[in-house]
Image (cartoon, rainbow over all chains, first blue to last red; front, side, top):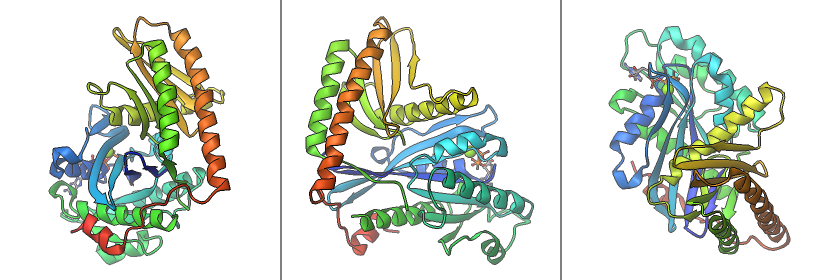
Length: 195
Length: 160
Ligand SMILES: Nc1nc2c(ncn2[C@@H]2O[C@H](COP(=O)(O)OP(=O)(O)OP(=O)(O)O)[C@@H](O)[C@H]2O)c(=O)[nH]1
Ligand SMILES: [Mg+2]
């Protein structure tokens, strides 16, 4: 749910990073946290297992600056990618304004990517959203590893609606900000339309 | 379709702020927040210097959502109220119209029964404000317009 505070002049939006386990969702947020200056970010909260797998979610509030005198704030969340945490994933999607799908480019993770996209579609539907209509960006992560599929192949299999498709190496920050900005742009354009 | 947008305007802000402040004084609570179920703080009453309200709101909403999930599993429709009792501070989280939630940080020695009672009362008052607001938007022209930024302004904000 986009929340516009006309009193404090703020636009607040919720972005969820979705995708298969170990795909790099948490790493995306960690990188955004690292490079964002202190006044433009809040605490990074990670509810994780002792082996650093996301158990419930990561949360990072950031601010991009002002547009027409309104501060634009984005609440970034990741879901746990592991299949058996499905009930947690559903909860995190509540009130979502935009989704980033972090795909793992390694050939052996293709099935996991496909399973996760189909799971995303189902869970969005359950919350009353349509993947075909919600602001959405596809990130092809782990481009630095051997044994990855070509971009064209990944796009062919994973793109659902001609969404922006961004290559990334999340630990090095490659593609991380472009992904975030691409989804933020769509969310704000949606918001403008609803005016 | 994306989520419905919720706008907070001066009139509602003032009314909600007054309701929350009254409850906070009556309960001698440290902090009272109205948050959205998606985890955003909407109106805050009290001293938030030592408490990160953004993080608190996000975790409280997630906590409430997880508790709803638990309720479903054991065949309850909902556990509408959550109390976390600490040694110095306690936390109270309750649902409000399924779209919002009230969050209270209060002294652990206070009676949680009284907190629960006041919260219920306060929730009803806030529901009235929200209903009035909805009526107002339906009847009249848009209460105030969304910022109509241009593509160029958007690119400037997100500049690469
Ligand atoms: N080589 C390489 N490693 C990566 C990349 N992105 C993430 N990793 C590593 O992959 C591992 C898992 O990354 P996470 O960000 O924790 O994955 P996640 O998607 O949050 O996983 P879950 O929380 O289980 O859903 C970590 O060790 C990361 O350092 C990448 O682009 N290249
Ligand atoms: Mg993770």
